[in-house]
Length: 330
Image (tube, rainbow, N blue to C red; front, top):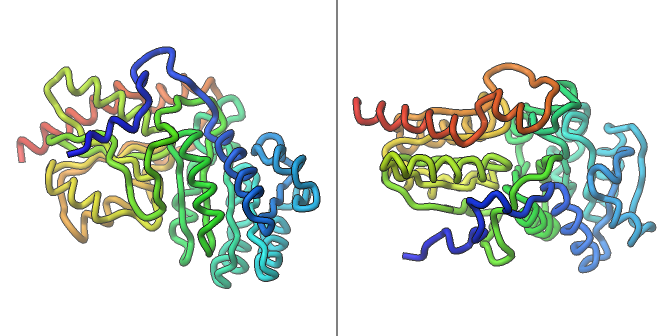
């Protein structure tokens, strides 16, 4: 059996591990996609530098449109361009897109199955000092409920670049969720990525941890802590939340008998909800969902907020031990 950890950064547990904002990987992926396909176009709502569309805009000014602070227009213009044969990527903060323009996404993109790629940047509480208004915590739920929509939440900047390239080749509506703050680069250029399959990053037998985005690193570090308690956690990076790889997740649940989900998002309706729905249909097991518990974020430094809301490795490990005990007592 191939060890999945061979595709992870060799210095994963080191304090010196490389860090980079996930959004930076999107910028590189978009630029490369633009090099390969002249039909790739980019549109932004006055946040070109923040969302990392700036390199594309400089390289291909005739294929970039600044629509200004007009998120609804951002979507409808892109839908029209898609119907004309282009592949538009549109970007803003996730709080504004899909936060402000969900109806336009629903009608002009999803209902009409237009080939628009929606980039929601600065998602999660790790946005930090910008506070609750900008810490989008409901976008996964908003987007995965839409028919025809693909939803992707990369674990790091390398995976974000790969995901962007994959979405550029895929036909149909898609949403990619990006974080603002620097986070550990845990995958490598050789790490596999697929829009059809979740990646098992670590094998285990006592419980399964399904996670995405910035929480993948925290889950891997939690597994290191659990190992000291002789608990083996299987870690699944569900970077593609829709369509969810139900086969991999259900098979892991059958093996371990317990599932914990971790996400930087509302605990309702996001990754945890998708996994719970899957297991209810295919293989019910004891389960705990970790995320934001029906509340908004607040201002603070990113690491302080993750700690405050229980989204760090020690908190995840504690909940995992609770779940393993619940499974044993069953």
